[in-house]
Image (cartoon, rainbow, N blue to C red; front, side):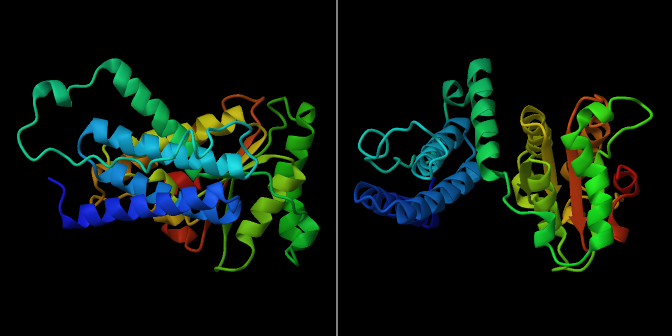
Length: 297
């Protein structure tokens, strides 16, 4: 049964969407996008907390509509339903049943599961910041030795892949940036992507960690699949220590599986010489990283 807190959240989503649609109709794109994005984030949280697959899918569908509209208003997506055809009415928030649920309501067919997975993957691609930064190495002050080494290790192989197609000369697949906060780790990563004309995947721990069983591993796998489709690509994981600390007996199952999946994907980066994907990890605490993870860089 939906409690008072849930009802307040539902009403808040409706109010946000009412405001977004009103701004959208008046041509106030920037303000409308802000309200659509706020509503989509709440809808995603509601989806993660829902227990029934049908309700989870309902929230994800509504969130996807908001994201699609934002992408259209921002010029990223060429076609989208307008506010009149698409989001005239705020999403109808479904409350979970209070009584016993019939078996036919909880059972999901294979097609429904596949559709839910597809929708989840689409949401992953929208929540992870994907861009082609417009900045150069010269925009980053200092760190000359680091920039020179990174240029040789990442930029040159991505610009001239024909020179790195043999076993004797292979590009780096993983680089670890470490240092105190504010020393330029993120700026250099963006500058590298810009210099190499690569797609930049800016990932935080919140994007690839889920409370649902097995979902974190799927998020990591999907991230690398998207990068492979968008080559040349640079995956930048900030605060890597938040998901890659040394394994111990205190680890819960989900944490250990997430690290294992990340290690597997890192190992697979070097399997195809033709791939132009580089993972850049950033941390303030390199000594806390799992040894196996450090060895991948």
